[in-house]
Structures are given as C-alpha cells and as structure tokens.
Length: 432
Image (cartoon, rainbow, N blue to C red):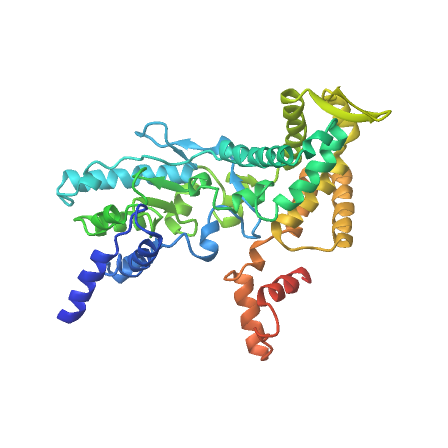
C-alpha cells in the first residue's frame, strides 16, 4: 500500500467514529465510513465471517425459516451457558460459546493475547433475551392509542358494550396495522424484535453498541485477529456493526458438529428450524381475542358510566348510563374461532401490504376455516401466514433479485417512468 493510501486509511479510520449524541448528518456519514473502512486491515480469509446483519434479508437471520415463515425459539430447548451468570442460548450455541471462551482464556493465560482489556476479561453480558414482554407492550400500545384518540374525539362515548367495541376496535386496528404491527409474524420481522430473541447471539458487551470509538478500539486492539480466528473455529459470525457480538453460523460444519453432539440425528437447516423453533403465529388468535376483551375491560373499569345528554319537551337533561360489564363466557360464545380467523386475515393483509382484494381474503378465510375443522388451529394459521409472506415483496429481497434477473434476461424490465416497480413486484408475487 502506498504512503498516500495509508494516510487516507488512517484519516478515514479516525473519522469513522460516530456516537448517538452527534447530529444526524454527522452520524450518518461517520457510520458509512465505519462500514467501509473499519475492517479494512483484516486478512481476507477472516473477512468472510464478518457479517452485516443490517443488510437486506440478513436482518431476518434466525427470525424466519427457509420458507420465510417467521419463527421464535422454543424456550424449553434453551441451555445455560456454563460458567456464565444466567445466560442462555440454544444448546449448540451454548456449547460453542463455552469452547470459544476456553480457547480465548487459554490464549490469554499463555500470552498469545496480551494487553487487551476486552479479551482478558471476556464474559457473556447478554445472550437470549425473551421478547414476550416487548411484544405485549407493543400490542398494548395499540389499545392505548385507540383509547386515547377515541377519548379526544368523544367517540369513546359510543362504546357502551362489547359489541360496539369489537366493531370500532377492529376498524381501528385495520388502519393501525398498515404502519404498526399486531400479529406475531409482523413483530418478529420488525425492528422492535431484538436479534437476541433468536437464541443465536452471544454479546460480550451490553452498553456500548452505539459507540463507534469503542468498536474501533476493539477492532484495532492486539488479539482481535485471534478473536476472529476463534469465532470461525467454533462456528460463529462476528457482527460487523457490533464486533463484540457473535452469531451462530447455521451453515458452518462446526455448528453442525455441535448440533449432532446434542443427540440430534440431523443438522440441516430444516431440522434446526423444526427442532429448536416454533411458528411465531402459533398463539396469535388467543392474543387477538385477549386484546379485544382486555381493551373493553379497561374502558369499562376506568369509565364505568357515561354521561348522556338528551332533550325532552324542549328541555336539556342529563343522565348516566352504565357500561355493560364484560362477560368472558358471553364473549366466547358470541365471537367464535371463525370470526377471529377472519379478523386476523384482514389484519395480516394490512400488515403485509399485499392489499389483497376482499374476494381473495374471503377465499383465504374459507380455506383457513376448513383447515381448522379438518385438522387444527395451527394448520389454519400455517396456511394463513403462507399467504401473507411480506419478505418477497421487499426491494432487495431474493425474490426481487430473481424477478429483476428474469426480466432483464427476457428484455422486459418495466420502465420506472411508467410503473412503480415495488407495486409490480408485489403484484407479480401475488400471482404465484
């Protein structure tokens, strides 16, 4: 490398240090610079394990299976990481982490690594983080927004019983779901869902992920290349944006060995998703029903009666009308499973932005109801969520690339001036 290039690299590396307290413009360009030059000095054979988990579908790594169905770890399969305080991961991740830490400690003890405060005191600060509370909080916020907005416009005055709430809240959620999320699949694929919810992440730092100065210090520290070598040796990626985070590489031969060592008969991706994960949508109908019931219950308990003004014989009178007390048994009898499947389908249509016509939604509902009757609720939910996969309609997705490649090969790429390409992508996928 010439002296001029070395000087440019030194300058750029100093510039690539953003923090969250900087201005938006400055932070943006410094983060771009960090992305470009932070790992410039790393040998080529190690760069392959440095993964940008903020790029295209890699954002969804560990969140969707091979069919793009959103998934969550089966928490009953989690294993404690030996020697670490209350840290858990999927069994093969925990075992790999334990061996990785032994290797690092051996290197420190035998002076293969020295003068590196990060690695000399390495311990797991964060691993699996349950996402249930975050999801509940996000869903409850939809009800809070509904109650707040309806109170401000006095529409809340017309919600005197469960039937009125169901109609009103349903219409509200169909609009809310266009920008927010209600279903578990939409939550798993959102920015609100933490990578630590996948069961694949091991974090050795829990408070400086936004500080590029600290990251650069670690990347430039003695022993960092050995850290990368160990990560590769035990089947881990290193998160490009958070170098003190390891993420299990599910395609690594080493990871497969750790999986087979747990007693599993197979270590291919299908087996991993089947044995260690469950569909994100598994309990969504119960979540939806509870959301409606609790929302009305909260209104009734906080506002047990409503002031009603009326005119009689030319005089203005007021009276207080009591809101109906919610009846859980009556609620279940009035609104059966078929009803909630239809509501859920309409919400998923809003969330996915596929915008199916109502006739298509009706057919999906009829088929889902038959699946539930013939098999069970999970079969119905599996079918519904296959119809509303939103990843393939995203620009940058594999479906997008395949579509572009096919169109270019045929010489029929749509003219951007004449057609909205994302709409074309969406409609093309809907015809599958």
